[in-house]
Structure formats: C-alpha cells, structure tokens
Image (cartoon, rainbow, N blue to C red):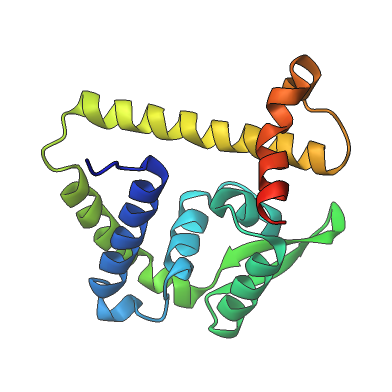
Length: 179
C-alpha cells in the first residue's frame, strides 16, 4: 500500500503551485520571479506596517543569508528600496518601488485566480479546516525547532524537562545514524 507522507505531499503541492504561478504569470509581472512575487504581495498586503528583513525571514521561513541575497537582488531589479528608520539606525524598512507598484495588480489577479482554482470544489468549512490544520502544523514545527535549538545550545527544552530521554531520542538517533 502506498503510504502518503504529509510533509512530502505539502512540499509537492507548494512546488506545483509555485511552478504554476510562475508559468501563468502575466508578462507585465515577469520581472518578479519566484519568491520576489510573494514578497511583493506580502509588502503590498502590509503597507500599514513597517517591514524589515527579519520580518521577511520569519514570514517566509528563510535564513538571514537567503533573505539578504533575495532582497539585494530585488533592490538591483528596482523592485524595493531599504529605507532607514528614525528610531533605530540598524534597521532598514523595506518599501516597494514604483516599478513593483506597477505590477502589484497583475500579481494579485494571478494569485487570486490560482487561489480560486486551488479551492475549487472545497466547501468553506473544508477550507477553514485546512487553514486550521496548516496553522497547527506550522506551530508544531516551530515548537520542534525551538526544542532543537535549545537542545543544541545545551539548554533543556520544556519537553526535555519532563521526559528527557524521550525528547532526546530523535537527536540521538540522528547522531547515531550519521556514524
């Protein structure tokens, strides 16, 4: 019997959606490749907030170096600028340029069309259930990452404090398997 591993299914769906979004992107928006389009849409949806590089890192679950590289390329393409903020000289607010603003509506229309296609045939309750499940999985992976980071830093995580042997088992298996 073919066993479906949920994490693989989610990753496969994400890649298929990203590929389709890229292929079906309007010609006017083709300057915004891959993750650029997602970042532009995120910045557009959050115009009323100050968005920084660390905000992008958190939202898109990417490392500091990846975020830096992507944002630098977006700057070179003229899609964003990084503006200093008066309250902290270390921070640079990320702002869309006129060039990015010009393609926002095309990106939104394409994303809305793909979203409608994706949920076609799903009831509103099924859509809400899916969102709830995805959020729970996201929180589960955040907690696992926090526990792992604490373990690697030599600090007991909450689960290790209550049942250290069980909490450390995955890390020990990984180390033993790599020997």
